[in-house]
Amino acid sequence: MMNLQKQYKNNNLFEQALTHRSWVNENIGIRGTNERLEFLGDAILEFVVSKEIYNMYPDKEEGYLTSLRANLVNTKNLANLAIKIGVGEKIFLSKGEEDGGGRNNPSLLADTVEAIIGSLFLDQGLEAAEKFIIENILIDAETKASSSLKDPKSLLQEIVQAKGLQAPKYQVLSDVGPDHNKIFRIEVVIDGKQQAQGTGKSKSEAEQNAATSALKSMVK
Image (cartoon, rainbow, N blue to C red; front, side, top):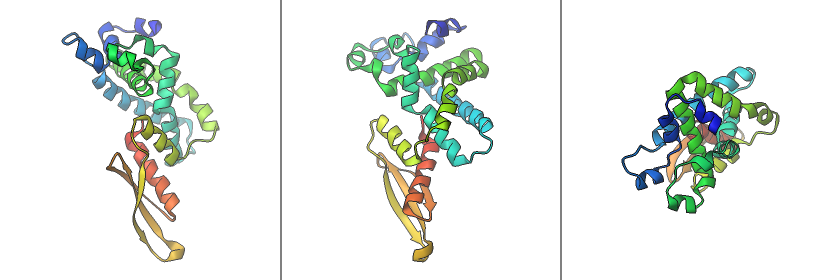
C-alpha cells in the first residue's frame, strides 16, 4: 500500500479513498467518506474490464463476457485483492466498526478497492486507474477464462448474498405457445424489487437469461 500511496500527487485523495463513513461520523468536518469515489471507481472498473476482455476474447459472445467480467469484479475477488495489497490495515474505521471485524469485511474491502480506483482516476487520469486494474484485477482473466465459469444464476446468488441479501427469487411471468414449443418469460426479484427479466424455451434457460440481465446492472 505504501508504494501505491507514493504514486499520488494529492495525498488527500488517497486518504479519502480509505475513509469509511463510520470514521467520518466520529471525526466530523475532517473529510468526507469514500462513497462518491466508490461510485466513480465502480463505473471505471466496469468500463476498463469490459473493454479489455472484449479485445482479449474476440470470438466470445455477450453472455460469456458478462459472466467473465462478473467473475473478475465481484465482491469476493475485489476483497481478495484488498487483502493481498494490505488495504484492510489502512482503512479509516470507527472503533465500533473495527471491533465488529470491519477490516476483514469482504463488502467493505471491495468497496474500498473501487474507491481507490476512483481516486486514482481523479488524481492521475484514466491511464493510472487502468494500469491498476490491469495489473491487479485483469491479471486473473486468463485463469478464470480457462476454468469453468460459474453460471449466471450461481454467480448472481453469490453476489447478492455477499451484500447480505436473501437469495434471488424467480417468478414465471408468462409461458406462450404449444407444449412442444413454449417461450417462458421469467422475472428475477432481489430484495423484494424487480431486477430483470429473461426469456427462453425452458424455465431454466429463461432463469439464466434473467440472471445474466441482472448481473449487467448490479455486479460489483
